[in-house]
Image 1 (tube, rainbow over the protein chains, first blue to last red):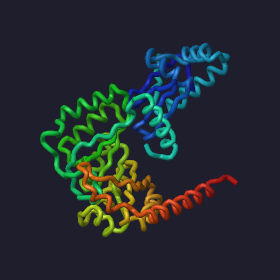
Image 2: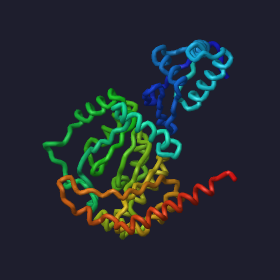
Image 3: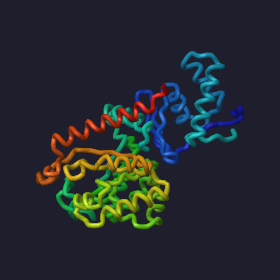
Image 4: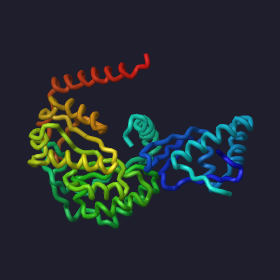
Length: 95
Length: 241
């Protein structure tokens, strides 16, 4: 469940590397490697620069950058956040 | 980290990183010291040269530089990595820098559950054990240390109890190739990642003695054919229809 008043932050315990518009993230806790595609990497890079963006902010970015409608962008962003939170790669907090 | 899905991702990223000159993974040879005397080992001496050995401060600098260079994954190895006087400090520092840290070991220093638990608590995620056969006399023949087989098997058990991901690296030689599939079956049964490698090189000083252990062409062909058949069997059994 995602709320408008939440922000999302990268968990710095996970080593990561960006190359060629893709990202690999190692998750020492689960002992897994995760990969982000071009869109995921775009959001990830934004989260690096802007520490704690909100769902709306990320949705807007995705929509503009990849020229997709707001509903689709929101669904994709929610999936992205949900998956990374489950893997403890992102931390959700109140804004 | 070496699950099949992870391997696909890591192999892809190894290629990407080498093309970009980013050392995604680094293997640190902490020491030449070893408590085995493996016939096939490429290291000429089982001692450290005091003039060449790095201080703890040097190792910290190495890790700092690797972090800056973009490294994510550190493998601690030797000789026997755990015989380095700085092993625990380096492991702790590597973990604190956020590296995913694993190690290659013979397990001879892991004698108690406390040690295995300490490895986990200090941030080790994956252990690769050098184990050459299920037959003690074959393994001990290659390591030239009587009782080493029993100790390595015990260490594997302790590390699995500690919740560490365990792998076995088996060098293929003319002494163990005939029963290598028994070892592979044992690993599968124990949920251990198994890897067999036929590469035997001369020692770093040019001594060719290790090459006497190379499997013959016939042995290798037999091994590869059997391996292919086994992998086809696995593939067929996994087909949905």
